[in-house]
Length: 379
Image 1 (tube, rainbow, N blue to C red):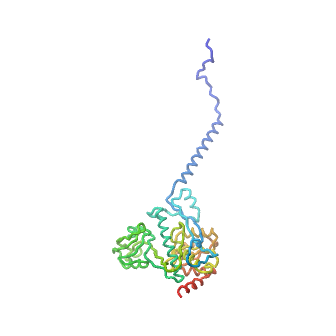
Image 2: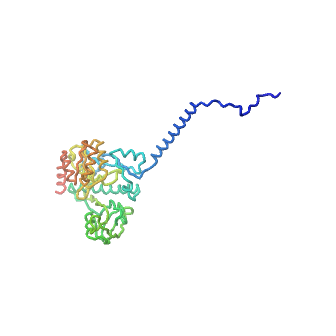
Image 3: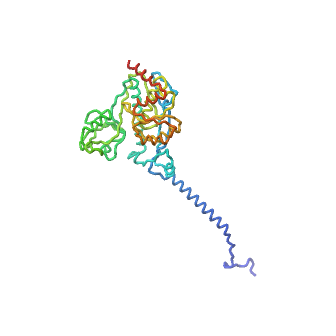
């Protein structure tokens, strides 16, 4: 007799009963796991995907006294504070950041090509650092002129920006310096304007240009176009500012400004006031904390700057009660900045250095100390 268990035909095997509840629980767990996986992938993708937008975000408000260095003459540290303001720039923000910034009133999103044009991020950064270097020299020069010294020697016209589709875009780059037109030295933007306006659309004109990339001077020839608002007037298509050579060798003392990696010329007015405050006794702000933005020009005029709404938000967050801004911004921009800060900050537009000093005088600042210092220099 054969031993062992009897053979069982496959057809005789009865499967265990199906546990529907268990299968349902497994399906739910699988579905939940799949959902969480897809959610994680989606979140990661949102951070990895980069938009073609640049975000302008409130930056910092920093006391300028720490930037001013004086050697060879007595200086006067202040209890009051003159703050420069900055804007943080985030390039190609992520999808999630883009969506978040859409509901943040303090942030402005701008298409990338409107910010950088054809420049790379590094080229744009270097341009802003170059502009800051020029702005610091100009700020020191204007301050010393206010105090009675003759230190400003304009030596060219700094190219800030070129207009797309104009002759300037083909031959000039931001950072270049125009030093002559048709062989005649050009040392200020008004001179350049006069040289262009004396010609007609279609005229050829030669520029001597100091290249920001090499320091070499090239001669370039341009065929002028016409202005959009007046077809009879010649147009080059360039925004400019003065470049100055700071002549301080005969002063007997030295003033310098450090600015770390802050770029751009918008701290010009703040630095001018900071140098004045450091070189003269008394409190230029009356002991108050004041924030300032705006470029400074050779004649003391204050030029417009960008990012004022974000700077106003930074001033508000810092708790500074007064913010001096360029009057050239226009009412619409001023209104938008004031909306950001409400009644927490008094935003005061100024057109030139005298206006700014007048505001500080109203705050109790010792403005007379500047005139007394200048009288001693010129006597």
